[in-house]
Image (tube, rainbow, N blue to C red; front, side, top):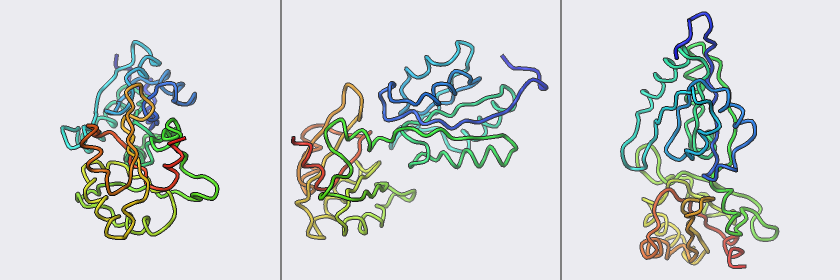
Length: 245
């Protein structure tokens, strides 16, 4: 129901939905969902989270299927503007953390440019769910830092930062890299690092979570053999060996 103009208080809250398990959402995020007049949710946001909202809350799917159909970002921006101006509080529910390869800041800047107060609630990002497979991102005497990079840049190329990351002893986590597995594996092989331990985790934190572990040089074959695909994260580094324990 559209409120009279003088009753509407436009607001945008960009909320992290976490890696998949609905119990991993923060209490602050839950409260935002409860007050929302409109929820615009992504493909990777667990639909169970919508149950926290009122039955009167409008729910709009604006998901982006990897390498498939998607709602253009400019369309999402216009929907945020329209719904905030006519209904009030818009919660933009994004999988993982909106500020980690989630374009959350773009939407906040857009809202603020149009005079709409906007805020951010962090979510657990998918790489942290590696812990459910006994893979820590750091571990004393094994890895003291983490690089997390996108597997595919806007132009479709492999991130140049990956070559910098593989020169260190840090744990390397690659988001959105499944389509680039061959290139990632080849890059490590060419640097003489093909035998470094690596893992792929699909649907992290969900009941249908799947994992493979092997040398980085073998990842493309292992993924094909075990039918792993997106959404998945790739973890490369000696911390992966701890997942055997």
